[in-house]
Amino acid sequence: MLGLNRRYLADFDWVLLGLAVAVALFGVVEISSVEPAPGLWRRQLMMVGVGVAIAFATTIVDYRTIVHAAPFFYGVGLVLLALVLSPMGRVVNGNRSWLYIAGQGFQPSEFAKICTLLLLTYYLAQARKRPMDLRTLATACGLWLAPVFLVFLQNDTGSTLSFLSIIAALVFLSGVRWSWVAAGLASAVLVVMVAAPQVKDMKGYKAERIKAVYWPELADKRYRYQNEQSEIAVGSGGIFGKGIHSGTQGSLGFVPEVHTDFIFAVASEETGFVGSLSALTIYLLMITRLLQIARQARDRAGMLLVAGFAALLLYHVTVSVGMVLRLLPIMGIPLPLMSFGGTSVLATFFGLGLALNVRLRRFVN
Image 1 (cartoon, helix red, strand yellow):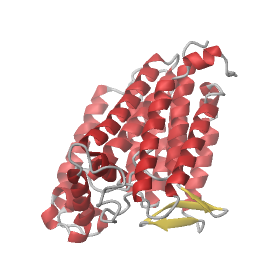
Image 2 (tube, rainbow, N blue to C red):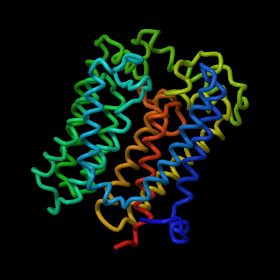
Image 3 (tube, rainbow, N blue to C red):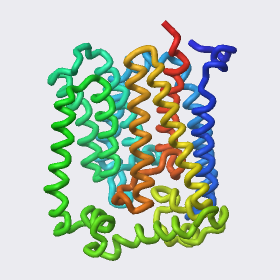
Image 4 (tube, rainbow, N blue to C red):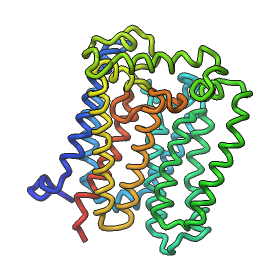
């Protein structure tokens, strides 16, 4: 066990943790500017504090011990996802993705992502064949598919797709054959080419959200509203923004869900291009730092664990910002650490704690 000694303090990645806390506090400030109910920013600040404590606590036990306990974490994750589909689950914004226990609500899918990452790391780190054989790939996909199917049943498209970043990163880093990569990419392109024209004639809110971005003239105006208001918020911020607590699109309620999925819109309105670019730069530095930790890891398990988390973080940032800028359809994906939501904050700090753990033990035999 690592104590609070000189070596621990010297090897700890204070830069990575500092970047995470900085972007989280930026989110707290923006939530305080647009909170639809009083006290939300205080709750978010408390969750950030708890998240930092979780990150430190995660570094105490060797990450290899945590990885070996992956089947337990994975099992707990599956049970929680299954409970969401029971009467204990709640529907919020059309998605049955919330679980309430003793009056407290949380989203098990956020923790299930980390649990799935741990199990795939545990399994693929032991796979010795290079390149990966078909049996190993099929087993990994089977382990990955179980939580994905449960999240899909919750009607949570954004979270369902986020699991793709985990399996793609870990399978690629585990030595998948290039012919399989090419076949997968070709299949994806073919599916998009075949499905895209069909979306124009489809009905339902998911199809309307896609049309609102790529074929706005065909979309119902109700589904264009959020995209349009988000664009107005981002554009009205200009270079330096209107100032904290001085925005209108977010604070006056023109942008729905502004404190959660669209927090980047209000940040752009109030801090402008400079503020939004600063936030994106912090995320870039975090992901770069994570990739450096993965490269320096002492074993495959550490490398896969951190690289998989970096891929998950990159997915969330890309999709969340893409929604705000009307580059991607709305999927209800939170911006890590900035969006209001205790479950997402705690899960992200848990993932960061695992990465810090790997870095601390990069020289340990």
